[in-house]
Amino acid sequence: MADFKDKVVYQIYPKSFQDSNGDGVGDLQGILERLDYLKELGVSYLWLTPVFPSPQKDNGYDVTDYCAIDPRFGIMEDMEKLIQESGKRGMGLMLDMVFNHTSTTHTWFQKALAGEKEYQDYYIFQEGSPQKAPTNWQSKFGGPSWEYVPSLGKWYLHLFDVTQADLNWDNPKVREELKKVVLFWKKKGIRGFRFDVVNLISKPKKFEDDQEGDGRRFYSDGPHVHEYLRELVRDTGIEDMVTVGEMSSTHLEDCIQYSTSNPEEKELSMCFNFHHLKVDYKGGDKWALMEPDRMALKRLFEDWQLGMQRGNGWNALFWCNHDQPRIVSRLGDEGRYWRESAKMLAAAIHLMRGTPYIYQGEEIGMTNPHFRQISQYRDVESLNYYRILLDRGKTKEEALSVLAARSRDNGRTPMQWSPEERGGFTKGTPWIEMADNCRAIHVKGQREDKDSIYSFYKELIRLRKEKPVISEGSIAFLEKENPDVLAYKRQLGEEELVVVNNLTGREVVMSVPVLKAGTGARYEKLLGNYEGCKADEGRMELRPYETVVLEKRGIRADAILPV
Ligand code: GLC
Image 1 (cartoon, rainbow, N blue to C red):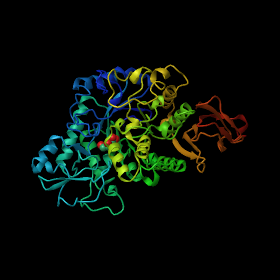
Image 2 (cartoon, helix red, strand yellow):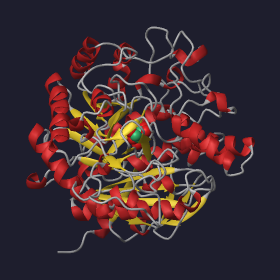
Image 3 (cartoon, rainbow, N blue to C red):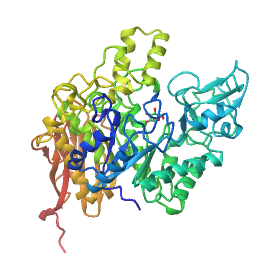
């Protein structure tokens, strides 16, 4: 069994982490320079988003060659050195395997375009008239998901950008090719993998129009996905490595199956799902803003935490990644309670049942960058949707305010290392602008400060290693009907933690029955984001965005039963 329960994974978006050569783009040498920082933070795995040769239409998720390094990030020797140097510091490297699709610049697709039938069968080509796409499915980045190739008289499927052609996993040759990629990196010493949108790999046998939606119900957790994953894992012998699948619009029962620990049915170590990050999508539409629905957030955590516990599955715990706006801007407070809310959000997620992921900059409370002009954006999805929003009748200002809240570029601005110009990220011009507050929020200002967000993350990582109740304990939810508070109890034998989080910027009073006199237990504060803790006799007063972690410390004398 891979050990991942008491570990924390740190996600690096190499393009924006550290530039070593002044070209404005982060690189592998840059990551090497920062390994000591990551070691000090205490994380055990480093997940690198794709650094393979790519035209970068989707920032590397459009791969041209799975077994090489894009020159803008470095050379293979840099990657080997990174594997070695991370290993020396007790950290394993995880690579991002984008196996649902390749770039259309990949030689397989180029051969398909040149008319080679064998390679056309690597992708999902359909005959059809140039006037009518095979189905009405929509691409995740907006617009139709099929593209017509006049020279072939065929359409190909692309669930993402038009330059990202979906692979045909029903073709055993494709599955063999992808196994070779996994084996290549395994041999190099990679310790784990993140599989990009891996629950979309199995498409239905027959392609039909979706009368109810954009087509996703036909291919999310598709017909052979579990079988294909089992085969990939078994044939590459990666059962004991750390593997995480990114699951798009997924289902609980499928995630239980994807992450089961049963060796006979082994698929992955754990799953990312995104349901909890849609609670501020009005009517389910990412591009329609609304205040976060806290009750919905609580219910989703309950469903997924309890469901995965019942089925013996394992969650990847996260708020942030390169596709999401910054969480403190989204569910916290960028102003007055910036520090408190960033810490509360960290504790809320890290102490649940699962393996936490930290996305670069989250540990210092980085915020959205507050871009004001369309020229500041780089992301293909954001640029597409800007046009779509204008077409739908929004004004430029309205469309820009939607992007400022929802664009993936919110999470992609360069890491803020120091108060200097360009945040210590680069000596050149960064490929995307820094956030407007980069002189105030940076690693340098927080590393030595015991009260910083950084120190709080460090403490959470340390506690997970130290306390099996965090990594192994069961979870039960408290205060279920209160939309203002996310509270839960973790338990492992005699060990017990009560975690209480005020999700609001107001003072909130809640009852905590376990703290009542006469219940026999005594609790002590283990961690929090304010001085002290206002609790007495079954009642707690929570300050704005307060988080309190209480630890059970044995039995009170007055509660010991007479023999
Ligand atoms: C995943 C990646 C995202 C990418 C998409 C297509 O969702 O995280 O960045 O655009 O897959 O590969």
